[in-house]
Structure formats: structure tokens, C-alpha cells
Length: 550
RNA sequence: GCGCCCGUAGCUCAGCCGGAUAGAGCGUCGGACUUCUAAUCCGAGGGUCGGGGGUUCGAAUCCCUCCGGGCGCGCCA
Image 1 (cartoon, protein in one colour):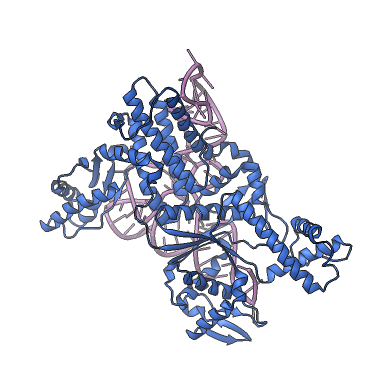
Image 2 (cartoon, rainbow, N blue to C red):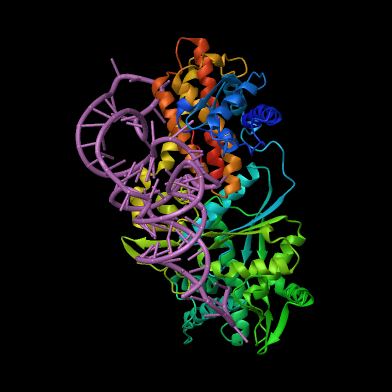
């Protein structure tokens, strides 16, 4: 990457300046891309930092310029403003970018060296007691994009869904199905007050009845509920997976909470904590002394009735993940779960793992609205906006893109009517249109007998400011991937691809690609191919399609 | 009361790991299609970056404080 080369050059100058007593020590060196074109290709503030207290950062900057070793990268250096060093690079590096970017098999922008770090990204993990809703859709879009971007940044990533297929919620779900099932056969029954009221439960019960008939009507209630829970769970599980796949969200692992209970892992986890002296029996329950490890208060692991809490399962699950060899666990949780982060971190430390290896990203609330009216999404209450419904209305691309332009820290007000209405104006189409347009140009070039051969094209013909801008924008992709991954901020990728599309549009406006000038046409076609490849790559990481025509 | 998040253009939001003149989309107003895709482009208008204080050569960005909004503070998940 060009910044590495620049860093080497400037470091040499810094060392020389230290040796000569111009500055005391070489500060941390960083480069940034100036917002304004006249500030060069890359800038650094080292002189400002190193000159601190010495009064004249500009003098330090000038001294550094004098000490830059000879090289074939930097075309010009200027000392600017309070003491910035602005570097203007030789166009050769941009040509190199175009060549590398134009070949999709080279995966331009992706990490060259693969980290050994194994990362587990767990996201959505919704209760399997109802269809995937719009809120989970945000998690699916963000988690999936984040996982892909981490992969591009060189991590070994596993996408995981934690299936809460145990516990009270599931029982309530089973009881709710059973009530509808019985009523279907004329037996009086009602859904528990705290059960699942949604219409889909009735449909589910009827579907099951159609499959298995009335054989569960006359069996003991306990058996009926157990069997219906199992069948209902399996149906919902398939349904969720299908909705998520339709939303271009796939998983490597569906991890069942139930297996933790059945294999004794939960009891083991409690024992491990007990051995650390962090478990205490109190009021008939088993407590984790998490307050000692930074939590607000101690937490119950095993209730008085012998049933483990969600935390106990989390402890076992945490262990299971580390046992599978992961170095880092990223959890995407709804912001309403932030209160449980401290206990998970406490458990991490208690079990002897690195606190920092567990990273909980809180995805802020999605407030659902429908025509201005707030709807409280709740599976149990029966009010929900299904992801499938959103996809039916606005399509996968627009839905994903809408979620991916926002920071996970930003609460989203999601008015489904407004989103449907605005769908045609969604910026995603702008980006896709740019891609389709490039494809159209390439088709036209081919019709006219132009061959695209980036290797032999004379890229030094690309001298128009719009060509220059486009090459520079392409070059930034190499920083966008690692930055987006490091900040866990998929919206950066969305912004980037939008800017790239916009920069391409300016190029399209100013520079006719297919002309009688064969050499220039070849150069511009190369730029088109590179742009197409980067747009497709970025959209791919976001899970958005890149159409050949629109 | 305590904790976490948010407050930036009319609306929805980027920018926040300190940098040079704060951005985008939508909306509004005015322009551009015999042209490689007008799902586009060009231009205009629009801002006490919630208020105040501090740190710094430099603050939308870091710290403190206040105000406003959201979420959470269970032997629920």
C-alpha cells in the first residue's frame, strides 16, 4: 500500500532529524487524505506534533523536507498551513491501482496477508418462536456485512446464529400452538395470557394439524405441548433460515442452546466459576459474584427452582466458543440488552479469558412506524412487521442498503410506509446504476471492436481531472476495507461506494470513453473496468447486487 | 437515582481513533435529453454541529457540566 511506502520515506527523514537534534524524538507517524485537492495526495501532521513546544512547526516541516531520501514516488512536497506536509505523488502509483483493481481475481483492497485471528460473529439470534422481523433485518444486514468486511480485511470469520431453543419462551410458544391446535378440533382451549398472540401461531397450528391430524388431541397435555413445541420449532427454524437467506444472510453455524443443557455444559460452566471462588448459594439460588468483576451487582445462575438463567447458558456458550478455537467473539445485540454486557464480560474474565477478546456491539433500537404511528413490535403481542413483508415491498437491495447507511449507534426510525414510498429514491439505485452504466459502455466498446487490455493500455493518457479523481477514489478502497473492519462500521463502505459512483458519474460526464482515439479509448476502458470491479466488490461485501443493466 | 446510546441543513443521516473552507440523500427553486443508460447531470438556497465551560497551535470530534430524547437497571429473555 502506498502509505507504507510513504511511511518508510518519512521515517528516514524523521530519524535524520532526530540525529541532527532538530526534534527530540520521532512522533507516531500517520497519513491522511486531505479533503481538498490542492492539499496534495497525502498529508501528515508529524511536524506539528514534533514541533510542539519548539515554537515553529513550519521550520520542523521544512527540515523534514530537506531530509527526505531520494525516491520515485513523491513528485512534490509542500509545507502548508500551520505545518502540514503535503505530498503530491507521481501518477505511476495511480496507474498501478488501476491495473490491480481491474482484475477481480486479484481482490484489490483485500488484505494481502491473512491474519491467523479466528473471529466469531454472532448476530440476529432471534427467538425461534416467530418469523424474522424488520428489527432482526437490521441485525442481519449489519452482521452479515461486518462479517464479510472482516473477511476481506483478512480475518478467519465464522457467522453464527444462537438458537434459543430452550427455556420458558419456548414452552409458552408450545402452549400457544397447542391451544390453537385443540380449538381446531373443537376442544375448548385458550392461548396463555403471556403466550404468543400472533395470527401466525394459529396458521402454524393449522398447518401442523394438516400434517399430523388429530393424534395429539387425546394425549396428556404435557406430551402434546412437548411434541407441538418440537414441530413448531422445526418449522420456525426453517422459516427463519429461508427468510434470512432471501435477505442474503447465511450462517456457518446454527448453535443450539438446548445442546448446552443436554450435554451438561451449563452445569460445567457453573462449576468452573465455582472453582474460581466466584459462586455462592444464597436465598436458595446459585449466584455468580460478578460485582467483583465490574458488574453492578451479583447475578443468579441457577434459580431457586433449579432452572438455569439465560446467563448460565451464556457462560457455557462463551466457553464453547473459545473451545472451538476462536480468538475473538463479536456479539451483535440489541441495545436493550446493554445491561447484560457487564456480566458477560465478568464471566469472560472469571473464566480466564481476555476481556477484550469479547466484543459486544450494541445495535441501536429500530422504532417501527406505520404511517406516522409507532408500532410496538412484539412477537408475543402479535404485532410485528415481518422482514419478508419489507422485502416484498422494497426489495432486498433497498432494504439492506437502508440499514447499512446508518451507524449501529444511531437509533433508526423506520416508517415502513415511508420506506416503501422512498424506495424508488434509494441511493442504492444510484450506485447500481453506475455499475450498469459501466457494463453498458463495455458492451458498446466490444460491439465497436475495442479490446479491453489493461496491461497494455497507456494509462499515462488519463490526465483529465475527472480521470484523476476517479483513480484516486479507487485507490482509497485499500484503506476503506481495513478502516471499516477496524471500526466495525459498515456504513463507511456504503458511503465509499456512493462516493465512488458519484466520482464515476463525473468522469462519465466529462470523458467520453469510446471514441476514434484507440489509445485513449483503451486507457479509459481500463479505468471503467477497474471501477466496475471495485463497485461490484464493495456492493458484494454489503450483500447488495451489482446489476449488468437496469 | 445509576448505566449505555443519541442530539449536525426543513426531513433522514454521514463525519467523531483532534487537523486546513462541516458533507450526502430526500425535499424546495432554476436549468440540461437527436449524446457511451436522464434511475443521470449542472446550479441555487439552506447550519449558534443542543447550551455552557475546559484541554490544545487547532475541537462537530477529547474532558467536565447542564438541557432534551431513547433504552436498560428481575430468581424475564
